Image (tube, rainbow, N blue to C red):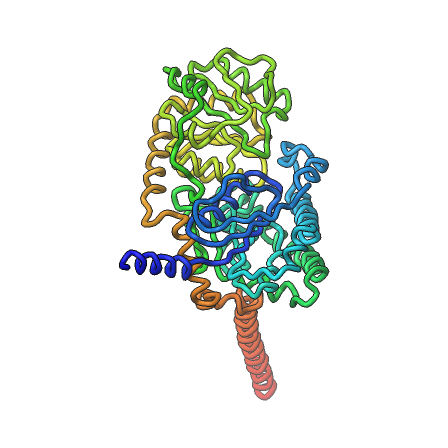
Length: 514
């Protein structure tokens, strides 16, 4: 009898904590999906009932809760047809880059909302307690929150940035917080000047071009929804894939929660051939991967040749994620693999350095395992991530456009020969591991918190209630300047009048005397 009571109590507790969660991750990029699915699987393992809209799908069932895929079929095939050389993005100026992101965002949102599987969901009787949307140039998708009358949670695959800060009134002075795609030193005047220009362009672009276009798409599929302006600023919670161990200390409003590192898993045993290669590397191993979106096989010949020449002169072995069967001119100390279990490799004690594109997942995994990096950033947040690691003394970076044999050899030899990089990375690793809770536990707690408090509007900062000119106190500065001008104007004219008055009196006195 007692056992039955205990079991019933457990069922009641589990049911009480179970939430119906809709997650929307429509970007056809594997690295983004890894994070989105890790978050949603983590929530499902907590006992929640989750539904995920994405171009990918899960094959392994969850142990607890429920995980349902709504797959955006053919998204990846369509994306492949529109393929362009990602290594060319670094040549784009910030205006072209911003307009390109507008196009990609509008196209992705249109295809998501028009997809038959999404339309089927919208026409069903499904109910959700909370809606999680990946914040990535897809703001019209926030209308799902309005449609289901559920609190909105935004998930950001990197740290706080210009795409999210204004939506929750998070302070982000361009004097020291860099925009994406910029090599930035906050103590350099010209860097700050450029950063401010890009910041202003970004704000104008989003408010004058991007948001109106997103509003038009949203109204097409949610005709009864209010204007996007009334939905944009209503996020109850923002989950950031960042942590103080990998990112500089910057302001955070109460609704922003750092959960960086939530996707990390305990290292597993490596395949036999790979295990033997790493175990037998007496001088150590340099691991090289450009991530999932960028592929080494697409590197221009001159960049590839620079890498090969430097690698051939290393005493260390090199493990290279190379997406082809053959690498022309492959040195004897280089091992190729089309796919590699990156977290498990970085956990191996013989890994001496990680040459990376600077993606945030790679940076987080490097910090977690204490492996110094040499970053070769190409686009997006990769430049910022590379700068953060360098600023923290955990590695170095070479802008992709400046990559050559001389710079590569000098930087790599410095990282391999100078113990400070590994020591700094080990210190950062301790910071990452020194946490009160597991990041997925924090995500689960705050999502349930928002549900319990019906949107948790008390986390909303007062700045969201002000128009931009009041938020920036421009009306106050204008008033002060106007009053100051008026005071000086009155003083100036009073002095001018008095001088004129006394001069006239002096003239009259002189006339009388004569």
